[in-house]
Amino acid sequence: MIRKIPTTRRGFSLVEVLTVITIITMLVALTVGGVYLAVGRMKDAQIALEIQQLQTALASYQADVGGSFPPDFTNRPAAQRHLAKAFPRYVGSFPPNHISNRPERGLDPAEALVFWLGGYSAPPGTSSSKLLGFRADPSNPFVALPIDPQLINSGGWTKPKFDFVQTRLVDQDGDGWYEYLPPNSNVPYVYFDARSYDAAPVANPPKYVAFDKQSAAIPYSRTENGQFTGEYVEPKTYQIISAGQDSSYGSLETSVRRGYPDAMGYATTGEDNDNITSFSEGTLEDQIP
Image 1: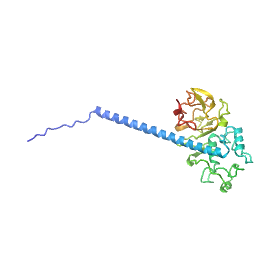
Image 2: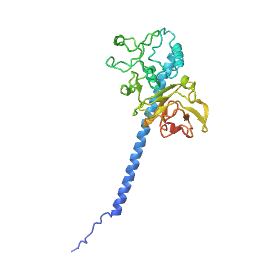
Image 3: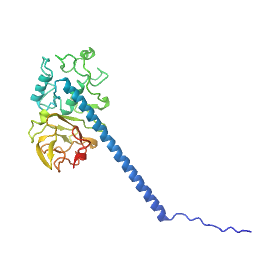
Image 4: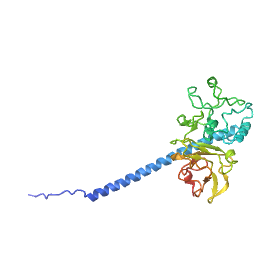
């Protein structure tokens, strides 16, 4: 008779168990970190793509009005000159509550982008869309405010040049003009017209202060080898600025220039490193040599 030799099953030691747990934890951390990075890159790409689409709409506007980009309303004389050139058949005066030296009364650089590409803000309950376009009559494209609901229903409005996502159109300051939020952000795109910033002194550039008063956007100046060249980025066109995923444009201190692309500490702080603009390929941080 063959006797079976008893066998003893040996379990894992505590050290082995801890080693396996450590390895699994590291793998999970690497996976989660990779996923987080990929999601962040995807969000940046969404904003960059939408800025390109806004640029296409601005090019369409430029072609329609004789080669001029719209004003950002920080420079009243420049805005008036643009209106005279872009709408030569318009015989009326531009309504004073559209353009004003008092920001609380007029359009600002975030609202200007929506206004020129989308038109008038529809009063609540008067339209299925938040934006109406402009009056189709080239001799009278503008209307007095508040807009008469009967005028809205009468038709004769142009189609907006950009297909704004309705849920991202917001009126953060409650003045009746919409701002447009980038995907996954609670501060809007800002539009600066070159006629405004190229004529502005360095110590007093155009600016847009976020509604939460935590950051401010100003036009970027060009740098080379860590030194300012004396001109703004895109001196003949415009700058569109998104605050990126941290919803911060940068410091509230607007008297210090912000440089691009090799800021050497002048501009790209932790707050505006992730800003995405019309002149950068991706975030500003991606452009630092």
